[in-house]
Amino acid sequence: MRGWWWAGLVLLGLAGCGAVAKAPASGTPVPGWPLVEHHVTDAFGRDVTYYLSVPKAAPRPLAIILQGSGCAPLFHDRDGDTAGRKSTNFFALGAALKDGRFTVLAVDKPHAGLTPGAKPTGAEGCSPAFNQDFTAERWLGAIQAALADARRQTGVDPARTLAFGHSEGAVMAALLAGHDPTITEVAAFGAGGPTQLFDIIAYAYLGGGWAHVGRDGLDGLAEQVRAINADPDNATAFVWGHPYRRWSSFLRVSATEELRRSKARVYLAGGTEDQATPLLSLELTAATLLADGRDVTLRRIPGADHSLAVTRGGTAETGAEYARAFAWFWHADPLRPDGEAP
Image 1: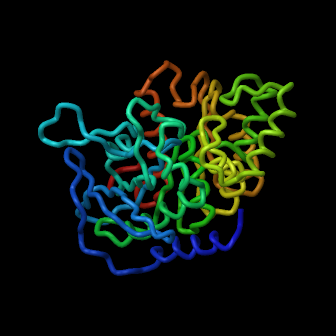
Image 2: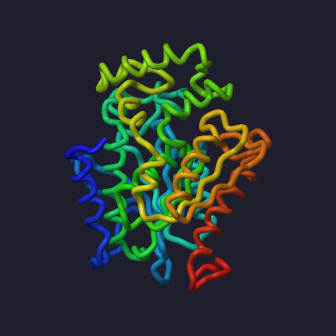
């Protein structure tokens, strides 16, 4: 996946990483949330919307929280709220804000927005503009632009940055770390291993899995991948909930190799009953990093599904797993060995 655009994105990501003057506080407060909405133009010329938590008295380390698949915007109007307060379905964002020990950054995907009644996951309910635009490299460009701009804002200490993601967001956290050497920590939940294609193949042998491919379907799987690669920019032909254009990009992203390329400490977590990312993929990533002598932690959660919950819909269980990762992030700070907030 290394072409001219990777070099450009790396330069963009590094542009905001050095010692730069802080920008004055600006942006629009998000009603009902301790966040400020900002805008920045990325390398592709798109207006990127991002949200940064309200600055504290002293600059804090930065945590960028990356959402999973689909085109749901981070915020929407709250039903029946005459005060104009916003709602979000992005659980990890609320968990990060609740922790309160770091500056929180979240980025809207360009052209985000669901058609009425559409599922929040997958891309079948997304606009043609979103599906034509969305690839791993273009999403990375938006993230890097927001990150560079956020590092200039008041309240951000650029010396430490956590890339935190779940599912597709975990893959993007790894990809970001592989292209930004100033990412100091990565917390990835259900990140996968070599590629998502490997995940499908692993499930063919393990049983289950989101693609529903068994051992007798592996030849057909290879044909499907060839069809995707033969028409890689097709944004209207769908398989596995996303267009060929999305798959031709994401199927080539290796979370394992991106994390190997990074300098970051790594925290991986997954459930033994996850039917979206096999725990075996995380094991492969962790084993590779461990053999490289890297600082890697793998949390195996018995009985947990892709949401990290043992109980179906157990949001408290998911929140507890996110809190573990935040504690891991803080315990690495030699000035705060017990993880206290600054």
